[in-house]
Length: 220
Length: 220
DNA sequence: TGAAGTAAAATCGGATACAATCGCGGCAAC
DNA sequence: GTTGCCGCGATTGTATCCGATTTTACTTCA
Image 1 (cartoon, chains in turn green, orange, cyan, red):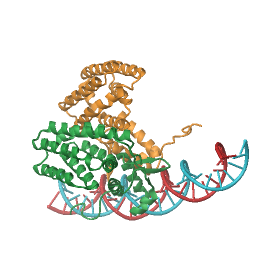
Image 2 (cartoon, helix red, strand yellow):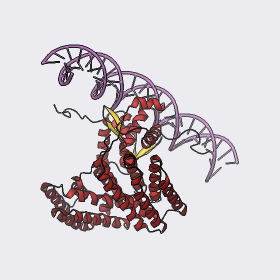
Image 3 (cartoon, rainbow over the protein chains, first blue to last red):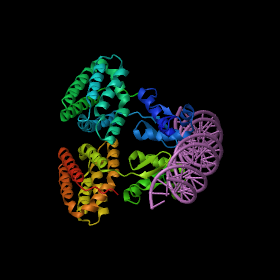
Image 4 (cartoon, rainbow over the protein chains, first blue to last red):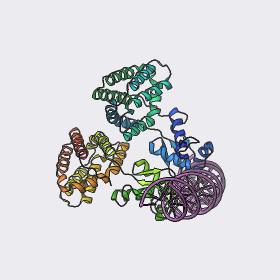
């Protein structure tokens, strides 16, 4: 019998963390809002022990801030922190992509094109956020560097509220440059030109960062 | 009255994690060895709750591996993982150094030179490991990018056993190249040439990685 | 001799219970 | 009116306990 057939075999704390993470990424929990262990425990029908474990996990991912003897809050990056993450992405993601290109299947590349096409035409911001994320994460996923991949995914997670905010304020006219850059990147991938694809991705992230730097910063 | 006057104000789990981390870095706990919650709890005079918290912290730092319902072990990186970390360092540390150079005080730079000088002459491997680490971490420390700095420190932590192993097998003759590279890097820092210092550091890490790749890998 | 099965001991995950700490409101003093 | 202090409620941190799972050691049989 397969091991995971019945109920969820994973630790409760991990399951709770997973749920919370998804909620934060969807925007159900707003950055800066308070998290109380009791409420969460009740909400998940568990005791506070696994809840604390989940909070510690999310804290280390950067999604939650824990203050000893006080409480926990959903992380709220300021502008400097956001820029910092983008600078790290600028260095790491081209590496991941360059390593991934050789291992992407033709099916993967087809999916990339499809994601880019859907992103180009969707009018919905949430859809666009989701598609953009899937596109980027899929493009690097085949890199045989698991630590690098989890690091990159964490960066995407903690900056998600800022992409949402940015897209909500700039509207759709800020998207076409990204769409073109995606296309160029995918074309390089199709040619299996790992170096060029990495350069494209680096330029894409860099331009986004510079754009963010001069953008008005909405605090709340 | 100062807040931290009496006993340690921090959470027990954090204190335990700190102690364990230091022990792992010193080499008191060998990679691959088992960690039992009961023993640790007894050793620290605490219950298993904060111990579990500490283990979770160290797991997220990559120093410990937790297997649900089984036990915990000190992490043991294989060659591929070690190479992966070095490739990430190769991208991130030059960025940190470039951002740090402008903020290094003259005192900092003097300390860098002193550390390099002491590393050059010490016959003891443990001393060399410690000095090398301090030199590198100090050189980037003034970068106003806290997340990047903690990431870099974690990379140093999880690869520490491999530097130790490497130095123990190659002996002192493998050190002089590093010493020269350190010198060149510090000279660039003295000239406040951030770009050049970053390039030097990148080359230093890259050469070390290539050296490691072709080195015999001691499993245990 | 070695492999497989089994039972007991060791160890872990989670719930409950208690202790410690923080924040806030009210009250008094200046 | 402002400032400082005290006490209570709310919330977090840690210890203890119990069921569940794994590990280990012993037994048995091929």
